[in-house]
Structures are given as C-alpha cells and as structure tokens.
Amino acid sequence: MVAACLRLLRRIPHPLLQPAAATHCLFPAPVAKAALVTQSCPSGADRVEGPFSTLRPGFASNGNFKHQWHHKLGSSVGAVLIGHAAFFLGLSNGSAFAQEDSVSPAAASEHAEGNAAGLQRIEDGSVVSNEHTVKWRIYTDNGREFFQKRQLDEAEKLFQAALLEAKEGFGLRDPHVASALNNLAEFYRLNKEYEKAELLYLEAIEILEESFGSDDIRVGTAVHSLGICYHLQLKLAQAQTCYERALKIKGRVMGVGHQEYAGTMYLLAKVLSLQGKRKNAECLAEESIRILEEAGLGDSPTCIQRMKYLSRELIKSKRFAEAEIWQRKILHVLELSKGWDSLDTAHAAELLSLNLGAMEKLKESEELLERCLAVKKKVLPEDHLQVALTLVHLARLTLQKVLNDLENANSDVTAYYLAKANQLSNDSIRITEGKLNSSRKDQNKINSTSATDTDKIAATAILLQALIVIGFIDVTAKSVLGQGMSQSDDIIVRKEQDYRSVEDVLHKCISLYKEPHTRRLVKKAVKQDYMMCLRKLTVMVQRIHPFPQMTGLQELLVEAGQIIEELAEESTRKK
Image 1 (cartoon, one colour):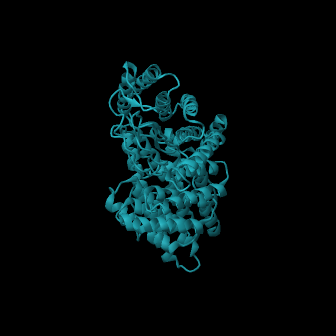
Image 2 (cartoon, one colour; image 1 turned 45 degrees about the vertical axis):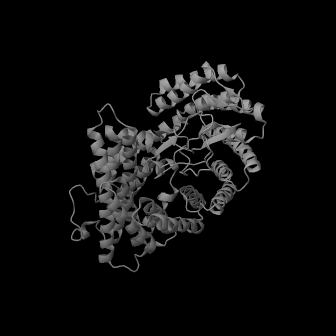
Image 3 (cartoon, rainbow, N blue to C red; image 1 turned 120 degrees about the horizontal axis):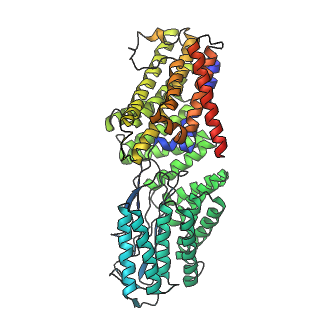
C-alpha cells in the first residue's frame, strides 16, 4: 500500500510541470504598459510577460497607457526614423503561452524634432502641415487617451479617423499612413481582434516596403509585430516566418549582438518550442541570454526572465540538473540585487526548491521553501494566496519525505510528520476557502472585476492541490499507522474546519462542483485540474474501501463518477 501511495504521489503533476492554464491561474498577470503614438519614440526590445513583473514604459513622454491583460506574449515599443522624425511601429503584447520578459530598452534616440502639433518631417526634409495632418495627430492622441480610460468604442473611432486623415494629409502610400495603420492594428490586437489587426499590419508592411525596400529596419520592425499577432493566434508557421525574416533584417542592420536582435530570437525560440522543436528553442533562448550578458545586462529583469523561461523548457524535457544550474544563477543574481526580503527572490527560490524536490534533494528543498514562507509572511498578508501556495508545496514535500524514509522512521516520527503535512494543507485550505467564501458573498455585485476572477481561479487551483495532498496523507496514515490521523491528535489540536480523511476531501471536491459560486470556475478555468483531483480522490477512497458498505460513501462515489463523466463529455463536444 505504501509503495502504491508513493507511486501515486509521484504521478501528481509536479508544480513545475503543470499545464500553462494551471500555472497561470496561480500568478495573476501584471498590468502592461503600452503605447499608441505617432510622435517620435525610441525602440525597445521585445518582452514577454508573466508573474511578478512590471513592464517599463516606452520612451515617448506622452505615449504610454496602462491596461490589464491576462494572456500576454510580449511587449515591444518600436520606433524607426523617417528622415529627422521618428515613426512609431508598434507595441507587441502577450499571450497565455508566454512568460514574462521585461523590456530592455535600446539606446534612446532624440525625439524633439517634428513634435509640434500637425508637423512631421519626412524623408526629403520638407514639412507637411495641413488641416488633415493636424486632425491626424489630434485624433491619435485622443484615441490613446480614450483607450487608456477603457472607452474602447470611442478609441476605435478616433484611430479609424486618424487613419483617414493621414491618407488625406500625407497621401495614400505615405509612411505616416503605415504608422496610422499600425496604431489601429495595435488597438485591434490588444482588443484580441486578431484578424482585423493582421490585415492592417500587412498593409502597413506593404507601404513600408514600397517606401524603403524589403530589407529596411522599419520593415523588419513591422514584420516582427505581425509575427506576434500570428503568435497570439497560434499560427505558428506564419509567426516563425515573420520572426525569422525580422531576425535576418535586424542582424544585418543592427548586428547580431544587438538587444533587439536577441529579443526577436527569444520569441522565435518560443514559437519553435510550441512546435515541439525544443532543442532549437533552447539553443536560441540561451543565445539570447548570452547576448544580453555580453552587453552587461546579465542581471537585468529581461535576462532573468529569459533564464526562467529556459529553465522551464529544460524541466519540460526532464533535464532537471541543467535547469538547476540556471535556477541557481537566477537566485544568486536576485539575492545580490534585491536581497532575501523580496518576493522576486522568494519566487525564484521556490522554483528552485520545487526542482530540487523533483530531483529528491529534499533537505535543501525544504529549507528553501521554509525560507520562502517566512519571506512571504513578512511581506504579504497572512491570508495571501501566495502564502497558501507555499504552504501546499511544503505539505507535499513533507509527505514526500515521510514516504521516502518509512523504513528508517518509527511510528511516532511518521505520525508527527503526517500531522505536520496535514496542518500545512489545512492552513492552505483555510486561506483559499476564505477567498472563495468572501467572493461568494459578493457574487451578486454588478461591478465584478477581472482581478477578483483571477483570485478565485488561483484559490480554486491551490485548493485542489491541497485536497489531493490531504487525501494521500490519510491513505498513508491508514496504511502505516493503521487508523488514519487519530494517533496524531495529541500533536496537533484539530480545528473544526480541518479535513482529516480522504472521504472528507472527496466530499469537499464534489461540493466545489455543486455550489454555484465555484461551479463556473471548475467548469471553465480549472476543469483539467478539477477532473484530475476528483479522479485521484475517487481512486484513493476505493483503495481504502474496495467494497464500500456505507450508503453515504456509495452515493459519494456514484456522484463523483457522474461529474467526471459529465465533464469528459463536455470536453469531447467542444473538440
């Protein structure tokens, strides 16, 4: 029975190897800073967003706005010069399949020239100023402000009007029209209207190719933006083609050691990884990191996030030892730059700890997790979801230690550690249930926010992990100690809301589906996690009670089976 428990525990998806949907719900996406401008603005390298990041603003003084996006691929502010003036070429945003990479700015270019309202210097140095160019600039600025306020209908109308005025004022095939096309494309992409955005990007690229040639850096920047649009749609072949073309242009014009070149290389690595070409992806990601390190940016947020991405790719390939090297490097950099009382440092240490746990380096893994928990409790409120997440990681690791050392431990020691794991799990559950119950009281409020939904999704995902751990604790206790957790009641005072048996947690898991305030989350946001949890708990109950006699237990198992069947059928229909 114990050996079976250990095998089952190890088959729980490791936190480092869980699908993207599960990991994303644990770490809410940050606020992205973007720009939709026509004034001069120096270029910035690509960035990819994810947990715990704050993106740097663009460089134009009036060209940035903030907005919350849950699924991000990357953000890059690109500007290329047209004569003496800068020409904006797009902010590229992110997606669910990408983690965060902060912006690494290129050298700032001056943008004072050509900034007077209604004036733009063009290739031959002359100045175009007329009624339409003035309106073009006003509409663009106002459109950006409305977008910042989330007044999307008004913003769309203004960007469309700006495009019409640019055509009237500069001519149909003028590069400034490409700028207006790009701004409208950015609006549609950020609003997830990718097909509209794609057509506008293509038209902008066509104008730029006519004006400057197919190998011009302005074309390369625009093609890069189109590649991100394809990337977000998971049109991977098209995205790869765009990134490769942009990479070729940037390498020729900027040099293969430039940060912009490294940024495009990094996004190309992500696309190749999604296509299953992991070896090539890992090589490109590592080369992208090397370029930043040689530029003196080895401790920059950009470089750190790329190292995190590379370590995750290595873990997916189960190359844990290689991933450990990168994770230790990340932790070392953050310890020096931010110290231990930093959530960034704690998060890096937690990822290293999980990897060490997968490698059976349990002592060091436990020490790191306990240190992370202390930092989080110091920096965050005690009922924060990040605290709950570390608690469940510690509970799982404690159980893993028990199962690995059963031969050398006496029953009192085993009971103590099982009780400790049980307490950690229950503490995590209390935090997550507190979040879900508070949202239950507010479920009838009209003004619900996406941040609240994100918290509820994260709470549900963490709760499901904790329920699985408690189920394994009970199975192990009944197998080793002969009677569940009752022998450890003198070690830990049982709280009324504690879950002590696998039957309890199975009932709780079923209730998540039955209760209206969590059913939507289970069916939409964490369906796969929920089905995995319900299946594992059902198997545990059946192992303990192969011939259940209690009517209540039989009904519980039947109900669990019906829910699994219903969710599986729903998933099949959607496919």
